[in-house]
Image 1 (cartoon, helix red, strand yellow):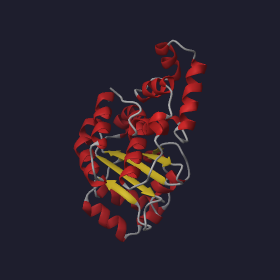
Image 2 (spheres, rainbow, N blue to C red):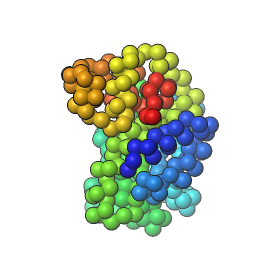
Image 3 (tube, rainbow, N blue to C red):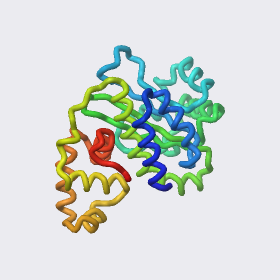
Image 4 (spheres, rainbow, N blue to C red):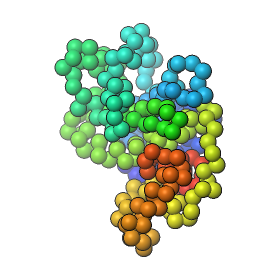
Length: 243
């Protein structure tokens, strides 16, 4: 998957005024990523006055209505797995021996949610929780090939979409753009393009240890729990750009 596609989508997000517009943009872009649907939900947003989650999904209205009527938020194994960890959740590895879980996935597939799925848990400094998911209808063999290519790009997109959603929800952030040194910005920018710490050290002609130092400093200055979140915040505030 070309990074240019991710960069174009991230650039488009910055121009969207509402989360609903972003959902439409994600729907239009799914084919370019080899996926069928995208879903984003967030809970415990500090500016939200209701307990309802913030969301943007490309699923059918039929599935959304069924999900609410069945109160599947209390059954959904993907949400449970996301709440319990930090790593991406591959739906194919979720235990389906429980009758309710098996029925959930069966009904989801009937509504063409997707045979395969990958979800990215997001936790922020505001104690909010987000879950960004992508699905596909490819077979197991194709999924095994597609999944490794999806993870780095979708992880970046997930965190950037979360920043976008918080901004549109009225969450006020400090002025991060002036906090970073040029070296920190450069390290974040190269990381955003998928470069490893070693790659960055070779490009910038510094030690790998120095790269780690700059990235750690950037995480602290951007109030981020990990480097991916720091990259997303730096992109969102305009401190760095992918191109």
